[in-house]
Image (cartoon, rainbow, N blue to C red; front, side, top):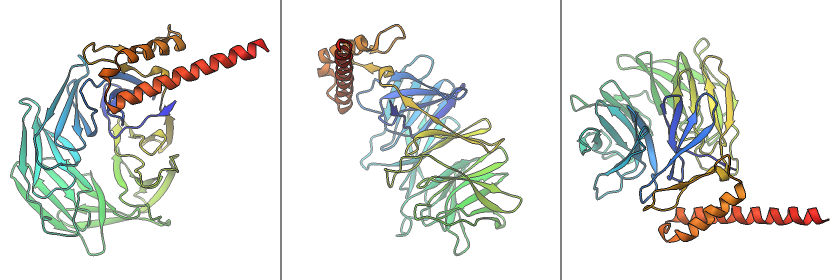
Length: 388
């Protein structure tokens, strides 16, 4: 069994819908049992590497990680479409939001434009957005951006100011922060903004009229990896989530303190990799999706309890699309014996290997071959033992 990894998810029904990090399989995570179900193979000619997943009605919109593109998947019919915008420059996507009938796409390196995708006309468009960062050497990327009402709010990596772009008025406002305060993420809370420091776990309340009004201090020691923590609210609770380290923190508004409440079990052999890319709020819970983390992490805002759920993909339960022409899928049935199923899949892949010229096709072929070889080896060992 191998661990499941995904960058983002969105809620539809009682499930979180996502594409696994390989970019080929759509999964649904049941939020009642925390079990995972493979829904569909991506039938496009290339994997879907995405940055954000959005939902409208019964469709999922996967916003590409690089380039300006959308993969649309209809949950009810399984129908899929791909839309791409022709660009000379390669764009890395930082975030995306629904605004009315458009998806607003925010590049990581943003100098003068955003991008929009109209879900009714399926057309892309550039949006001129003259943020005040174009000639600054210290501002190289956007670590945090959020849509609040009609405005997209940004901070740059210097962390010294906030900027907002009004989607209706097409205007930009800039707000400087006090000297010595550098923030790396923010979110909306009770009509104000909560700002989290770029390094460590200090939090500030900010209003447009008064600037910083409250401070919440973490009194523990910082590590070098304690950078760009994400601040998230759920109900009336405020949490700070480590990205490059493993802590989960809670804001105590009564004594203005930031307190650690959990240490995540993660892959300690992987350095420089984010614990998670995105988290999802569902009802009274924050779900931290597995990236470096080995499990799905669920924070219950009513109890402040943190649970970790192993989400593994059973090799025998993987479904494989074996041909673009046939459009068929072979999968495990509860009534099918595993060894015979694997042999059948392996034979089918041999017949269709020409159809699987991509890297993922070779990966699937090698995986199935190794499973069959292992099953045969186990069978021989069992037979040998039985004769002793």
